[in-house]
Amino acid sequence: MEIHHHQQRTRSYRYVVYLVLAAIAAGISIYFYAPKPVNEAANESMSLFLQNKISDIDTKLKNGDADTDLATRLSWHKSNTALYDEAKSNNDKKIVGQRELLKKKMVQVQQRDFPELRTAYVESKKEALDGQHVAIGLSGTHQEVLTFEGDIFKPEQVQEDFMKNIYGIVNDLRFKKVVYKWSDAPDGHHNYEIKSKQDAEI
Image (tube, rainbow, N blue to C red; front, top):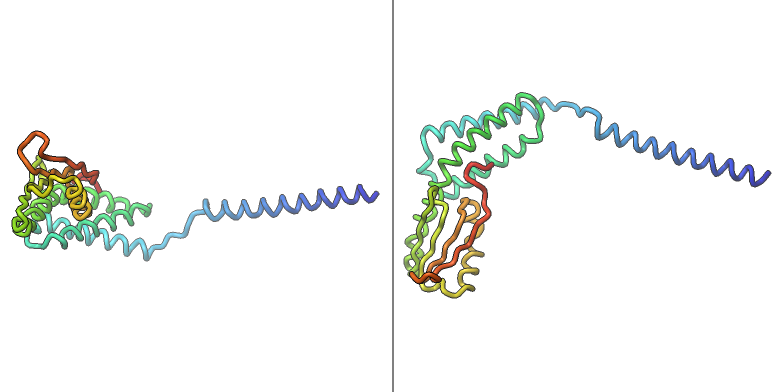
């Protein structure tokens, strides 16, 4: 009899455990799969931000932005990307439409601006580098190849140290290659490929 009661208690305990686990699983399912309440105020704010950004890009596409300094222009592009990324998680129909329009405008302005920004970067460095007997130049269909020329670049360690210093900015400006040249000999240069975004990539 005692063994029989013990078995009953064991089975009852197991049922209780199963019920508790089932309740927990049900709660998790409800949390993750139940429709989330729509935050209308947040959607309105996001919609306003998107519309303002679209209008801002339209203005820059129409009037240009050549008078603004390099750092400010680059920061502006980063802010565009940040807003687009934030809007990607919003499934509101109006937001989705604005987000896709923003993407289209961003691609247009990026394809125009980044070659200009790369050119502006090179122009901004010419005077300082000339004092170090280093020439800086651009090449490529979209000004995406950056070249430094000078005797100082013959040691590989100098190239690597220089790359560490400029990698952040050349990546942000979407250069595709950096060339160090120290002579006109066939082996007088070294190329560093940059895995940066394409100009049309968000």
